[in-house]
Length: 453
Image (cartoon, rainbow, N blue to C red; front, side):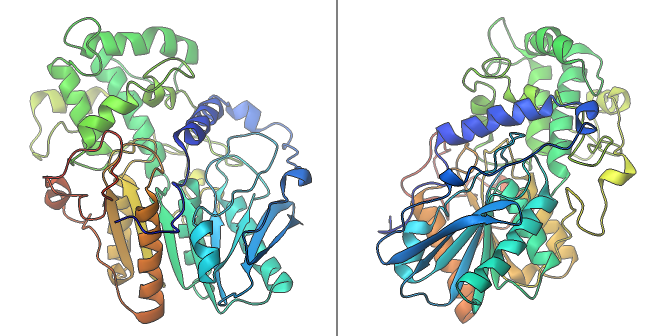
């Protein structure tokens, strides 16, 4: 049942489509550009003011080169909910989001704060440092909270996961949604899609690709050679095409409900970048570099590509694994210690963490939840993790009740020790079950969601 006062979804389809367009532009940047003079980021202070909700005060400004917004209810309960926004591309202007739960937080006594960060691009260190600085700023402007809950979406989920590991005594709980919870595994998935598509669709593969040849020759050849008849891509596939689709499903999080709809959606996406349905190919055009860390960050050394869950390789699987291009990440790009630009998430959590993720999201696929579950388990901290699967194909598209219920359940867990229910991502058979994702998908539903049995 939809609860009154819950916020609207975290981003409209138009908003996150814009983010995808920006991402494509970013992936075209070369290592030469990264070595150029550092960009001069700025905050347009005229965009910072916002009107407080009734019974609250709005604070805003620039601190430590980042813009910020803070909203505090008159009946503040002493709790602060911090928001980490997602990927902004490489534009020079730094912008701030309001918290998507704002319309619920303020009437219920919660203050919130959000930073623009002091840099754009996929720079997790900037997000972590700017958000930490904002919390200190809040202490000076408003007062020290008696509780801090960290939250964030997409890249902001990565920032959230790193913050609670870097500052385990500062936070009391965390709500990362649609998050990059497995750091470099996301880059590896994009690499897998590109290389497997090339190898299976043209008989050879290479990385990085020549953008022009890849866009106008390779990608059309992949689609033509994997479809059952002209114009059949991505719905009507030949056997090799079906094998490729199955490989993508397994590499993006495993056999699961809602993948067929996701495959259709992400391969027929509206016209932008290099054309309709090219999004998953477009993200393979980059050179694998990350901000301020020269060298390729993607890796498929040791990856065993499969078309099904049978561990024994077929002749076609063996041939693919023998012939596909292999590339190893540069050592300096995957530092496991310290606050790198794209830090590794260890899973060593000290506070309750509740996550949400759409099963059909192929921008930040659900493999992030599978891998995060594994890392937390290996740290012996599974008692502090609850994960929820949502049946939907969009990126960061959650209904008001899904997001609001998750926050309320996290608060009950933090305040009263009542651990909420979740979904089990640790067992591939469970993830593949026809009912997986039904428990927490709201009745309002999602576009292209597989109906629950």
